Amino acid sequence: MNVLPIVVLYNVDFYETNVYRTLLSHFQGERILIYENSPEPQNQCYETETILYHHDSSNGGVSAAYNYGATIAKQYGDVDAILLLDEDTRFEPDYLTVLQTAIEIHPDIKLFVPQVLYAGDQPFSPISRGIHKHRGALLGEGLYSLNDYLPVNSGACIRIAAFEKAGGYNPEIRLDFADFDFFSRLAVHDDRFYRVDSVARQSFSNEEKQLDRLFRRYKFYIEGARVARRNPLIRNMVTIEVMRHTLALTARTRRWRFINYLIQKFR
Image 1 (cartoon, rainbow, N blue to C red):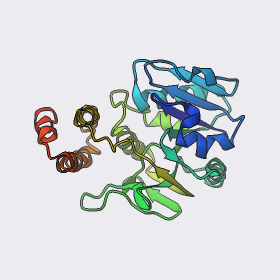
Image 2 (image 1 turned 30 degrees about the vertical axis):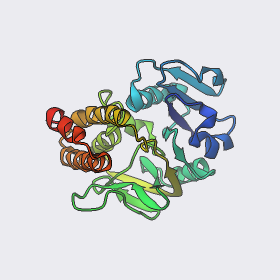
Image 3 (image 1 turned 45 degrees about the horizontal axis):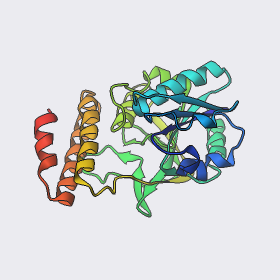
Image 4 (image 1 turned 45 degrees about the vertical axis):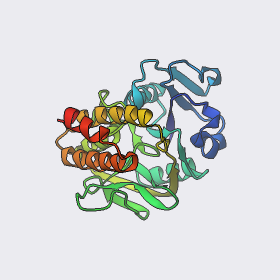
């Protein structure tokens, strides 16, 4: 089973990322796609026979990156699945090996994901779809349903045929909620996913304290939420997540700016 990792970068050096240091540096010589959304092609220097590089100055986000990666993977002919990777995620060094073993043992399963933690040992992904449940779920290795849980992008490995059947990622959703939208549509065709025996840890760049920068990021967040809410499969889930995030930002900054913007734009 051949897997093509897709790394999405924005204004960061590939060799300085968590995903390279903890995972990809252990698999030198394997094919990797670097998809850079930065204004300038700062990582083009790393392109080799095995490292494919693509620069998207328009910043199409993760959706454009994963759709492009799936197309490239299919062109290779010998690649069966794509591995979605975020620059900020730290993986166990043998994750690719563990993943490939799980894929071979379960040929009928289309989607494989790790347990993702943040802030120490707090569960981050998969995320419970239940309205009254906690956001992150701590799951053991095994088979689960996308009707009960949705994983985040980073660390998810999906067979190309299933990716195409689900229609790929929605290019209108550049970042936030792209994963909820895609995996909910995938569930219509096959709701099963396998939580492999590996744990990843997510770091966040959301510790920003400058109000203007927080607000710019929030507007980008609402942009994705507005498009994702068109998907009836996740409409309620998106609404709940937006309300939770907005209230958290309001409490953190003690400003009504976020709630006012929500009232104006999130309709």
